[in-house]
Image (tube, rainbow, N blue to C red; front, top):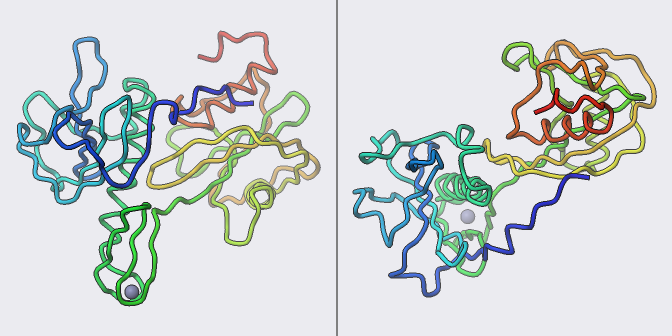
Length: 288
Ligand SMILES: [Zn+2]
């Protein structure tokens, strides 16, 4: 149901080891303290460093990872020293703040890049025996030379569900939300669960409802720090709203033309709420 854009793999070839890219200009995703080094052009669009290396910016990578080739140019993620000053005319920005001012592919790749940096940094040593890990060159993994333990970049799947009851949508205000924002019910998948199980459990835990007809909506990477959000639409089956009072402070059914404050466009939650509103209201101007 999610509007499909052309897959990034029409333009991006992922790889673990660079083949012939040495000497050609590359895109550099340089992170210092989880912030990305960018420059802004006159049109207000965010640009990445694009050069053969980072020497002109005097940045010395602690570690770097080859990501692959995007639109003909190699891409690297780089871990720089924490809290360094940005070179003149550039700035370090949190990924959250770059959404919408960045090419969509590059935003996707920046999410990949920050997770590669974090994984490489936190998997230098074997978590089983403490030996220095070896990097594999044919896949994104590290293996321990002593005990053969293998480490892959971690992704934590989380489900998020739009629960419909007639023409109304369930929205909840979580304790940690800023202001009076409401969003959809979401939570991490637990070991042993199917995605549908996770949908049922999270909804029961957080608002005390049972749902039916769970349908896939779409998914979104959420590199804050390493989630994959998997969206579903479900129909109310039974129960009265009972919030847990800890994670969820309040929840209610809302009409499409009387929505409360909702999340920003960066989130799949907002895409799902927009989808709902387009289905159930004629007053589309209310939704950006
Ligand atoms: Zn080991």
